Amino acid sequence: MVLAAVLAPWPMTAVGHGAVGPGGVPAAGAGARIVPLSVPSPVHHASARPWARLAGRGGLWVWCAGDGRRGLSVTVPGGRSRRCAGVRVTAPGGGGRRVTWFAVGHGSFWARPLGASRGVSVRALGARGVFRYVTLAVREGRLVAVAGAGAPGAQARYHLTVSGRRTVRMTATEVASYRDRAVARRDRPALAGFYDFGVGTAMSAMAIDPARHDADGLWFTDARGPSWAPLRNPRHPWRQAYGPGVRAFGLLQRDRARRYYGVHAARPQDAPDVIVHWPGRGTRVVLRERPTAGRAAPNVWVMFGPRAQDRETLRYRLTWTRTARDRGDRAIVVSTLMGGNARSGARMYVIDYAGGAIARRLPDHAVAGTVRVRPDTFVTQDSVRYNPYTHGYRQVLQVLPMAGRNIHVRAWLSVSGQRLSETWRYTLFAPRIAR
Image 1 (cartoon, one colour):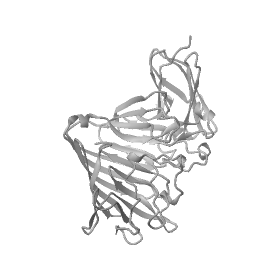
Image 2 (image 1 turned 180 degrees about the vertical axis):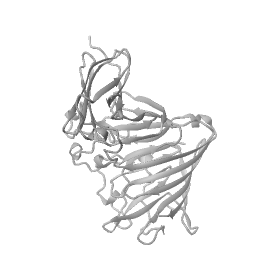
Image 3 (image 1 turned 90 degrees about the horizontal axis):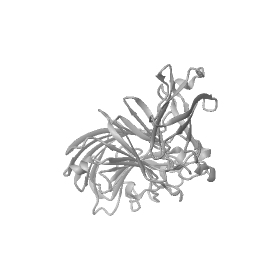
Image 4 (image 1 turned 135 degrees about the horizontal axis):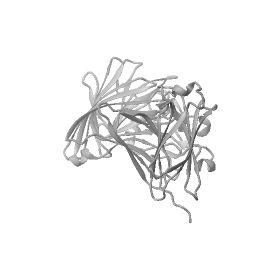
C-alpha cells in the first residue's frame, strides 16, 4: 500500500451549475501549486447535467467525466453503472453554486472541506496505481465509497467513509496484497508539501512576502508525547527517520498570518492541516526534503513504513482542518527563528511556545528549558523568558556542533521536571569551518 496526499487546487471546470473553482472562489493563479500526478483526472468533458443524485435534489450529485468507454467503473445506488475517466461528488456550497466534495480519478481520491480553496489528493499504490472501480452510497449522512486499485506487483481494496463538510474526516480501511515482497518493504509516501522559506529565514529578507509555503512543520506523536520538526529548504536532498512507534503524524500550517503571504491566489495561509492517525503499535516515519528554486511544487515528503508482509489490512484516519492552537495540555511550537555565525559554525535558534499549560503566565524562574544533543556538541546558550506578544515563552539556543557531523537537537520546556511543551526537533547539517 502506498498512500500519498498532496495539497493541490482542484482543476477549473466551466460546466454544471456555476462551478467556477474550489469553494466558489476564483481559480488559483500562476503561483498556485498544481501537481498533475497527484490530482484526479480533470473533469473537462463532464456532461452539463449530473449523472445521478445520491441524497435528493438539493444534496449530493454525481458527475461523470470522460467518454464512457474506458477508465473507472462507477456504480451508484439502484445498480446504475457507467464507465468514466473520473467521477466527482458535489454538494451545495452557498450562493446557488455547487462545489466538489469528493472525487476519484485515475490513481487518486480527493476530498476538500467546503469553503476551503484547496483539498487533499490521496494517491493509492504509488505513481503507477490506477483505480478500477468505485461504488458510491450515502449512509446516515456519510458518503461511503468502496474502490479497488491495481498496480504492477500489488492490488488493494478500499472502504472509505467521508463525513463532515467544513472539517472533513475520512476513515479508510485498506486490504492490500503484494506479489513481490520488495514492493511491501518500501517506505510508502504519505503526505507531500511545499516549503521555500518562512519568516525568520535568510530568504525572507530578500523576498516581497516573508513566507512561501503551504506547511511549515512535521508534527507527530509517539509514546513520549507530541513532537514538532520545522521544515526547511535544504541545499542538498535530506532525509530523517522518526519512530518506529509513531501513532499519528501530519504536515501542519501553523503560521497562518495573512500578511506573511501577501495577496496570493492559492491562499496558502488557509491550507488545511492533514493528519494521519495510525492505530496499534505505530509506524516508522521518514521526512524527505529537497531544495526548490522558488517553484510552487512539492519538495517535502513524509513516508511511513509499516511492517512488510505479503498481505496487510490497514485502518487509518485522515483529518484535514485548521488545528486549534490551544488543544491539549502541552504548549506547541508556534515559530522558529534561525541565525548563526558562519565563521565559527555556531547556530542560534529562537523557539516560541504558546498554548497549553503556559497559556497562563507562570513565574519566570519556574520555567526551564531542556536541550538534548550529542556529547561532542556544545550548547553555549540556553535561556527561557516570557514573550508577551505570543502570551507564551521563548527559548533561545546557541549550539556549536563539531565539523563533519550532523547533530540532532531536541528541546522542550519543563517545570520541576514535568514537560510543559511538545518536543522541538531539528537536525544541524555538518558545518564547514572557515580557515
